[in-house]
Image 1: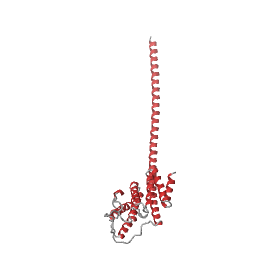
Image 2 (image 1 turned 135 degrees about the vertical axis):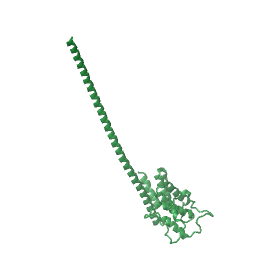
Image 3 (image 1 turned 45 degrees about the horizontal axis):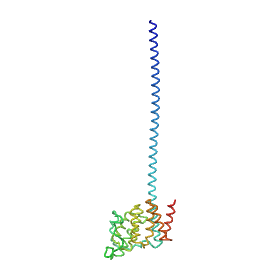
Image 4 (image 1 turned 30 degrees about the vertical axis):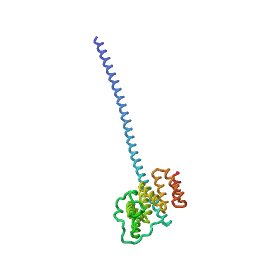
Length: 265
């Protein structure tokens, strides 16, 4: 009887030991699986961090390229402005030589202040009894124009001051013989400053108020450029083609042809 009890007890102990061993093995396996999962999650987190770092680097490169593109566009517009100025000299359409005077009517402070948009300037087409600067000293008018024009010189490039000065000139002398030139250069000042909306308004005013002006071909050309820059390519093509039709053989027509060729690429 005693031997049977001992055998039974031994059996129970063996079963318990086996069960405990099996439980330990199962627990070890679970721990191993958990460790593998944690390791996998850690790897994923490291990959995500690496991707984020890569994304920041790419974003930085994109921003640098955008800044570089903006600088190139500004430089291109400045080159167009310089080229336009040179063509005016070649074709006899440059600004008349400055006349020495000791007084100007356009207030110097207006060139440094903020300027209104082109549609807020009185029409440059004079009307009977209107304040068109009639009776003003031609030398004073010329000096005021030269002062505004000088801000566009490559050595200065003070476009904001040029905008304000041409605005003031057009307000002071809307009926002047230089009004069409002033309005055109106002548009150029906006254009090189990348203010396409106001530049377009100024060039359209040149076309509507001075269709026979020497500046009309340039104004129409720049209108085409601006429409293209605004993404209105269909309208831009029509305008540039119109430049070629209306001003065949002119420098504006040649530039319109080159731009149309570039737009096809």
